[in-house]
Length: 319
Image (cartoon, rainbow, N blue to C red; front, side, top):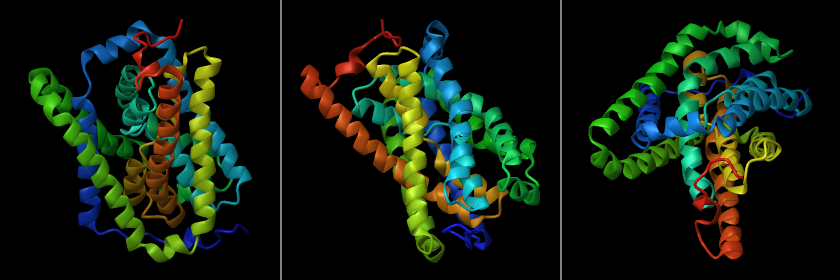
């Protein structure tokens, strides 16, 4: 029996209105990412595919595989294990570029990777969670119980990610100056609104969260540290420079846990362990990411005398 025994029977409740609000917030965030995306970002990936290939391998293969192992080692319940796998299968979070900039990393590479990755995840997310969840010795039964429909999830993700992303790209292409003016506001409003929603969700289901607080804090901290470490080590093994390693660290380590929370409510009936893991992830990875980015940025400033430091590298692949 795990330290979190009983959480699998807990249901985190949301009203239909709050679920609609969450979907709108997530779509708004994707719209903001698209406003900061240009055709050049996709051309950068085409001209220098190695960092992107490494990032996709780290996100789609290594992170879920390491997460799978962690669910077998850590004292988690089946619903918490499935929540960890869902978060690992989510696309990168929109704050990754902000953290990369703060850390003096390669922001252009971060924007390019996030833009292309989110398009891929429209199809990859439902397939990935179906695969890893189905082969898990404990969580597989939960996945069978909820009868997850990958095609229905694909449609849901396409509406939350694909449609607003396409609208944002269209607006950016038609009115680039307007997009430049409003994009920072859209990004920060969307981020703060999502963090506020997650905090409110945890507060609204405080008893379920607090009763298992200790193990949730430990599990999410370990999982998030592993994700950040996978990003850095994959970039290092791939021979990328310091600025690119920072970008990939946040690209892999910052997941769109808000999207994961929405999927928990839509497809898993607010299953307790999944909801609290995804909800706390949405708060913790922002806090941990800000701490790491600040430390890195200050170190770069001391080392180079410039706040840009490694971010000044124009080529996304270090020589």
